[in-house]
Image (cartoon, rainbow, N blue to C red; front, side, top):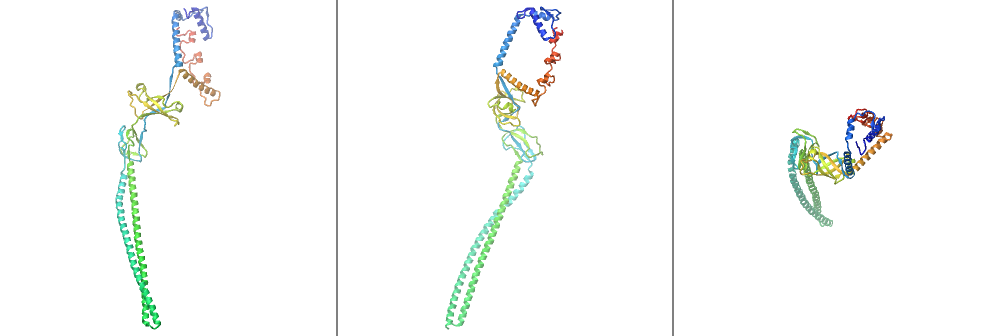
Length: 481
């Protein structure tokens, strides 16, 4: 038998060296022959039948495979992906919620999941009976109040006209009284002059005493008449002023009443508008045109609290992907323009495939321990996936292309970093010492001690002990005995 051009004695010497290396006692070989009986003759016959040609072919094949693997290991490129914690398909415009603005009891509902609606369509009607009754009362009050200001304005105009007439009549009466007073005053002056002349003549005995007395009496009479006319003028002035003041007071009272009525009318109209607004708020309408993507289970008579979410309208628009990543995976690694793929939970990717996407933007702030990433989809026309708002899934973003050797070096660096942390923990310097480090494994205390280690293998306790191992071979229990 030949192995790489050597004789059978060389094979025995090689086997002897290997046996002594892994065994505790030397074996009795001498000059290529075993002094004790060898119980595996068939194995020796197989070795004798072996040839150099098959061994050389195996070596060449192994060399070619090793070379190809080495080339791949250093030259090939492996794509690295960052996987999102969660993702969701959304339309470019956010869904508009349908919420109850006020609390109330449902009178009618028109919510149908998936129904196309237009902006302003009534979706839910709440009970408006009390508001309708109050609205009717306010409208009746408004109708009664509306006609009163017009009548009062007509009365106000009449009062203003009467006031003007009173003022004009008072001026005429005063003018007449003043004219009579001037006439009486002139007559009194004349009588005074006549009395003075008669007194002069009486002093010279040219006039009778009776004429003088009669003249003085006429003077006093004319003076009294003039004083009476002057008092009459004063009375007329007070009467005219009193009538004007009375007219002015009534005018002020009418204006005040009209103002109060107008205020009541304005308040009533405001109350009517408020009631109409309250009634309108109880008609829950679609905020925009779109499709009902979410509806609540409502029945007639159900009490709805204020602010309750009753549905959502999804407006038409292009779909986008909103994904959440861990900060360590997104910040500095995911950038706009990177390709990605979306796998939907409801459609297994092994059957339906994945949807290609591109990163559009990456949030710069961390919220709730996650980084928000927005992507745009590039659906395939041949895809069987019905894309719609709200489908959940996961996103895988291509972040790098490295060779296998670089990937191994990175992994080794991470392992060395973890090993350094574990060593610090063993030396009492690590606050977060992890059970099952390498030192604990050596001491037999490792929480991650793996059955079938070398020491267990030597002691024959390995969990992965394979029948026909070397110790079994020594003890004559080999599988190929």
